[in-house]
Structures are given as structure tokens and as C-alpha cells.
Amino acid sequence: MMENTAQKDRRLRFLVNTNAPWTHSGYAIAARDLMRRFVTDGWQAGMIGFSGHEGGPIGFEGYPIYGRMADQWGSDAMLFHGKHFGANFLLTFHDIWVLNQQYLQQINNEGGKVIAYVPIDQDPIPPNVLNNLKFCYKIITFSKWGQQLLQKNGFTSTLILEGTDTNIFKPMDRAECRKFFDIPQDAFVIGMVGANKENPPRKGWQQALEAFKMFHDKHPEALFWFECNQEAPGGFPIKQYAQYLGIDKQLRSMDTYVSVFHAGSEMMAKLYNSFDILSHASLTEGFGLCQIEAQACGIPVVVNDYSAMPEAIIPGRTGAICKPGFKLFTSGLGFYVFPDVNDLYEQYEFLYRSNRVEMGKSARKHVLEKYDIDKIYKNKWVPFLTDLQDELLGKVDLKTETK
Image (cartoon, rainbow, N blue to C red; front, side):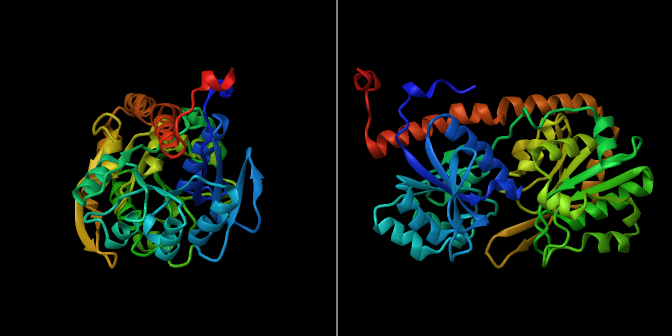
């Protein structure tokens, strides 16, 4: 529970530019959890939901959510909604490269301040990321890997990890969860949760399916559960590729309508609890919230040995790390690193043979110690916002003010 806000100095006003909380994306869930704590703790915060909301501001869980304007990523909305709200600063919670530099410059010219809560997911850091960070008053990043790369490029940043609500994502009765999703009780389920918006897919869908094919050849009771928007334009053809590999009968997923519109955190926690392991060997990740959510539920995770992913896993205790394979230099001028399919398969086998009950307990403990959102909010966000408030608005002696 939060402390009584009556004796707290909470003059700071700010808007968070990100995905609207009802869109169920990783940013949306993480932003929702933060906004709940900002508002409950007395901060004067609001949101720009550039993905998921258009039109006038609406009230949601005690704070306003402004809609997207002309710019897809909220660049103009930050300028104009920020003025309307009287924001002392604007917090971006997404990839920074998508923002329009003209609006970032205009915000700066008019005395506004942009603070980037930003993922760094490629080495080298693409120029379009570095160029937009030059317009930011402060930088907060998600991972030690990202912080070190920023420092290498001459940028100072504050490290605040993403966290998860461990009261939602927690171990549950597996039999009941599998019954809910109509999953056979005796199946070995490798689950994968992630976006599917491009091809080659950033989340590594092709490599995960190929490794599963090898695993299923030896373990016919295995199933592969994929959770994403299968119909996203330009996405990887998961079902068709599974059919090509001859494993389409081993695929499971939610109904697309349910997945897009009704798969909130509570349902996702049930889904994680239905898995034996989570496959999260992405080509690149600024953080990877799914791997934290799954571990909070006591589910071991396999990640790729690139970008921020290895930081969240204790190999052999909470999951496994597969070797990287082919590197692709992208048009963004950074690398995507594909997981090695053969080694990804070997990590599936390693977790299959492991004591996953004990590993799950260690995973849960790991998240409670390092990634619990309440601890991160109290130990990182409150000091950061308090110092920022003193810097922007000056200190106030609450004892003097209340006399």
C-alpha cells in the first residue's frame, strides 16, 4: 500500500506518451502499472495513448488519457496536449527514433522538456536513436546493456528496470489453467508470446518453430502455443510455416478476437501458468517484459544471448540462454542477431530434463527480488521524480507549508 499522500510534495505534472493501457502491448501493460502507482502516490500524471485512442481526453483509472493527433507516434500530441495539461515534462515510453525531430525541437524551443524512458536494443545504437536522444532533457533506460551502450556513445542515463505486478503474475493451479485453455494435462507445452508485425520477425518466430520441430520429433507429446496477432499485415506466417514443417497439428493459440481484445494481464497470467517453458529468443530486445512475467509465474525461460535479454535470466536456475547465430545488419544501421536453431533446441531439451519445479521457484524469487514493480517504483521512480521536481520547481518545506 502507498503512504498517505497528504504529507507528500507532489507538484510535478507530466504526461506519458505511450500505448493506451487497453491495447495489451508490452508498453501498454508496463505503462498501466506505472500510471496506477504514479496516480495513487499523488503525482499529477496523465497519458497520451498514441496507440489505441483518438479524439478528446477521457478519464481512465483516475487520470486523463489524451488521443493521438496527426502524427502516428504522438510527436505533435506531446507538444499540444502537453501545453493543455500544463506538463512540466513529457515522458516518452517507447522507441525514441519514431518521433518527429521538428516537434522535439519545437518543444525544446518553447521551454518544454522531454525525458526518454527508452529501450536500447541494437549494437551499434542506430543513428536515428542517437539523433533523437539529443533533444531529450534526461534519459532513462531499461537495461545495463543499454546504459553501457549509451555511455559508450556519450550519453548519461539513469537505469530503471521495467517491472511486473507480482500480485497478478504469480503461480497458479496448472491443471485449472490448462483446463481453461483446453490444453491436455500430459502435454509438454513450449509457449511463446510476442508481437508479429514484420518479416523477418524480430521475436524469432521462425527459429522457435524450427527448434520446436526438432524437439517434437523426439517428444511427440509436445505442443507449441503461440500468442500474437497472427493476422498483422507483414507479419511472419506462423501457421503456414508450421504446416510446411509438418507441426501444424501441434500448434495452439487463443482465438484472435479474444487475444486482441480480451487477453489482459489476468488471462495472460493463466496462460503462462499453462506452459512448461517460455521461448523468448528474440533477435533483439530492449528489455523483454514477457520473460519477467513468465518467471513471476514460476515458468523457466529460454532467451537469446544478445541485447538486454541475458540480464533477466540466471542460466541453470531460472532458465537458459541459447547461443546467437547469424547477424543481420539492418537498414536502421544496427544488428539483429538470430538465435542458433540447434542450440535453441538443445536449451529446450535442457529445460525438459531439468527440475522445473525448483527452477520455477527460483524464477519467482528472482523476479520478486529484482523486478517487482512496487519495489522498483518505491526505490527508483520516487527518488527520480522527487529529485526532478526539486530541480524543475524548487524544494518546498512541507512542515513550513502545513503550519
